[in-house]
Every structure is written in structure tokens, then in C-alpha cells.
Length: 294
Ligand code: AMP
Image 1 (cartoon, rainbow, N blue to C red):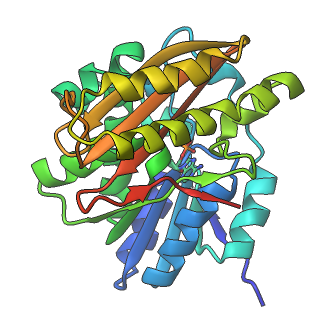
Image 2 (cartoon, rainbow, N blue to C red; image 1 turned 180 degrees about the horizontal axis):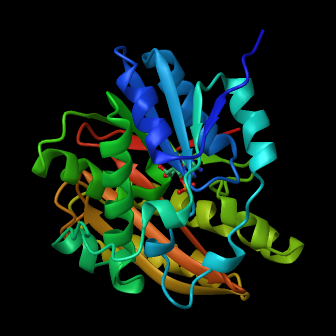
């Protein structure tokens, strides 16, 4: 029998609950409108912990003024049903007023390439808001293990670095990107796509696959070979506009000149009003993490 997760709305209730828990706590932060990508993190947390906590909070401080905060999709009842299926213990859903009360004025401000370049360059302030809310949740929930998705590679790197730099007693875990049958990375934002846009969106995965193929055949050559191959495929889709194709050292986030492991191939496009991001990871041992199709 599946037990209905306990829903906790207030920070005080969450702190009290946590104080009464002495076993391993796994935590998955989300913005809700859950899909199989989120659930894969929750399943992993379920396997490795005694208590599993999922937060659902659309964090205002990580949205830019022209971004989609006011229309971000939400369906808490559906999310609860999905989380019950996976066997979550606690769903933490605080409101924005309690997380950011009047006169809130302390932020976590990560520095360096990871926040100023690639996604950081396009979404100034995004990672500051993200790091701030993630640290707040870590302080309230005091998790043993936390689970993030490879889909948001730059976010995962920033959180991992924050845990190390600030000596947080937390084990960081990153899980592969979960993809639709045609390879499109699952995202709550995919719901914005019209049927034509949704069809076109499959080109991101195709482009990354081509990039991987060219990468493997041209080790030690200039990265432009891969960038050009990815670009050619992306621009073949006329309704899509390209934001970036980046090839970075997956540990330092420095630009790669030559094709070598470890590496992250990151792409971002806009289809209509919707931004989509995706990446493939070439691990230090030379194997690719390209995610998995469901
Ligand atoms: P979000 O609700 O978009 O803030 O995402 C919450 C967590 O789920 C983040 O760690 C994301 O990286 C992760 N996530 C989102 N989409 C996917 C996906 N398709 N596969 C794996 N993890 C994902």
C-alpha cells in the first residue's frame, strides 16, 4: 500500500519534522509540474535514504524580468499523485512570502565562469537566485543526500561547488537526463510548445548526437568541427533560433580549444517563445552520458 506523502506548507513545521528525524534524508528540489526526469531523481533518493523530501517551489528570484515566472506551469494535485506512486514521505511547499519575507536581503552570489558564461550570460542573476533558494532549502531540510539532474548541467556544477566551498555536510548526486522517445529532454516548459514546435524540438537531440559522433572521430582537433556540425543541424530547422553551442571542460567550465575529455557539449535554442537547453557529457573516462530515452 502506498502511503500518501505528508504535505508541509510552513518552514516551522518542516524544521520541527526534521528535528524529529535522525535517519538518512534524501532531498530533491523542484519547481513542480513534475515529469519522469524529476521522478528519476526521486526514485534514486528513495533507494538511498530512509526519508525522502521533495520541495515544490517556483522560485521568483531565479526568474529574469522578461521570463516566464507568471505563466510557469503548475498542477500540485497531479504532482502529489505522481509523488505518492514513487513513495515520497514529505512534499514541502512553502509560499514565496515565507521564503522571501519583507526586508529579505541576503543572497548567495556564486562567482566565476560558471555564473557569468553560457546560461549565466543569457540569464543574469539566475544562478544567484537559484543558489540562494537551494542553500535556504538545504538549511531548512538538512539533507544527507541531494539529487540534481544532468539536464541543467551548469546548475548542477554550481550547486556541487557551493556544497564544497561552503563545507556543507551534504552528498551531492547528479542523475542522467531523461528524454522523450524522440530524444527531447523532458522539461516542465515543454508544455509551452505548439505541436509544430514540439516536432521541431527533436532536432536538439539529433544535433547533439551528431556532435558526439564528430567529437569521437576528431579527438585533439579544434572544437569548431563539432560546433559547426551541431550548428548545421540546428539551423536546418527554420522555426528555431540558436542561442549558443558551447564545448567546455566539464570540471573547470573553461572553453575547450581541442576536443578532449572531460567535456560538456551545451546547446540552447528558442522555439517560438520557449527556451530549450540540452547537453551531452563526455566523462573523464571517455564514456558519454547522453541521458536515457523512456
Ligand atoms: P526544475 O523543476 O526544472 O527546477 O527541476 C528540478 C530538478 O529536476 C533539477 O535538478 C533538474 O535538473 C532536474 N530535471 C529536470 N528535467 C530533467 C530531466 N529531463 N532529466 C533529469 N533531471 C531533470
